[in-house]
Length: 119
Picture 1 (spheres, rainbow, N blue to C red):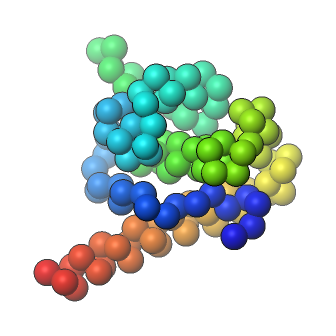
Picture 2 (cartoon, rainbow, N blue to C red; picture 1 turned 135 degrees about the vertical axis):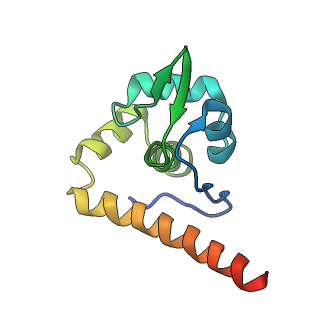
Picture 3 (tube, rainbow, N blue to C red; picture 1 turned 135 degrees about the horizontal axis):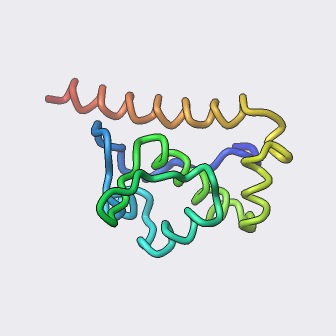
């Protein structure tokens, strides 16, 4: 694993639904809801839909939150460092970020495939 690849081991697969509540995302990403609300202020990439004073995250938001978590918790980045990584200053280009998102999706699809085969 290189320095820019967050660890995706031992994470729950993301259910196939359009919107997730803050509690669901907190559970999927092993975070507390207040951390998610704080990260919304710090990272412009996280943009939940807000309706009736509730936050609804989409799958893309969950993947980005998992990336941020990996950078901060697993690799020891600071919030500023993670922000720079997302802006491309340390990631080199967008291809690396998209590659990671694709890798996560492939892992989830493989898990689903295994579950279907065992059924």
